[in-house]
Amino acid sequence: MKQYQLVIIGGGASGLASAVQAQSMGLHEIAILEKLPRIGKKILATGNGHCNLSHENITIHDYYGSLPEKTLQAILSGFGTAENFFQTMGLYTRTDSAGRIYPYNMTANCVLDAFRLTLEQTQTEIFCNQNVTRLYKKGDFWHIITDEMEFLSKNVIFSAGGHASPKFGTDGTSWKLLESLNIPILTPKPILCPLISDTKQLRPLKGIRIKGNISLYDKSKLLRTESGEIQCNENNLSGICVFNLSHLVDTKRIQDFSLSLDCIPEDTPENTLDKLYVMRSIRYNADSENMLSGLLVKPMARHILKCCGIRADNPCNALTDKQLQQIANMIHHVVFPVNGMGTFEQAQATAGGVKGSALDEYLQVKKCSGLYIVGEAVDIHADCGGYHLHWCWASAVRAVNHIIL
Image 1 (cartoon, rainbow, N blue to C red):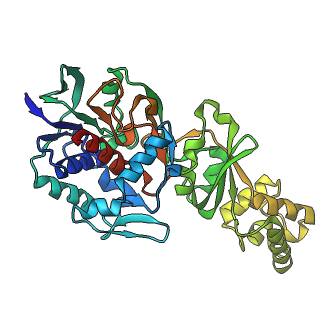
Image 2 (image 1 turned 45 degrees about the horizontal axis):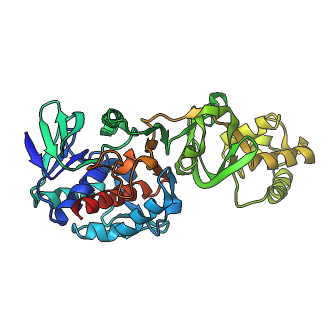
């Protein structure tokens, strides 16, 4: 049994950021406990291997969850920018036209290298293949027990992630350690994931991608509209724009939610109708499906015609003005029911986690002094675009700064 100044449970993004910040502020006896054979595995998969590590001009309004706004503001403002944080480790960044921040060479490997090389120059000890089975406090010290070892420390940072992407080690099993301490946790659900819909509608559309708008409705109430590429799969709709809507779905009343696809968002239904009049006159010998191929991919054209009760092989010169109006409206409002959420295996993030009310302004558990919760284990989430990783860096720095000071 060895005593440390800080033990970090979880060697992912927030855990590695915690260790780097701690050693930069003069803390020496630091241990990282990682249950996988290597640290940072999930970092390598982020941003399709490019690691979208932050975003420009992040504010509290980019995040959702139960953490008080005052606390969130202090964490974000106290951290500064990801560019500065990584430059202290010799890693430079670049920003794309959408404001997403990446490592300069656009590879996730160099982000993990920055952490690894920095920690190799310190006394930080990394213990892999260590599954923490018990966590309790006795006197001034926390006891952290794994299948093989026992560690002592006055301070513990819990950075074991959420439930999303369990193949990278974040399967949520470590949350049982927090539950054993009676720390209140909001039930986790997958977010930034596909939304399941009607297979009968989607199967003929499988494999197509449409650049358009996708809107989420709660009954007749519009909740939010996102723009981008929508991917049609056999039983779900996906793509970043769909992912960004997923956290708004209340799974307890899933039947109230639906998605509306606008295939030509740059047009109005009136302008689309004018185009249909022109197409009908030019392609008067074609069937209805081929008439619409001037605007839509054929599988979507067939689907829209079916929704309008029009046969795909119906001669386009037989279409009435009323039917053209119906088609024009449908092009801008193709409805798909929401029948469920994607799985944690398909999700990029987790909603839920330790309640904000259980934590102080430094992310320390109020009733468990010396225990800090950072990263995705906190009930906080955001859209795609580097916001989650930014939270990992910022929350880690906040916790460590309090430990040091």
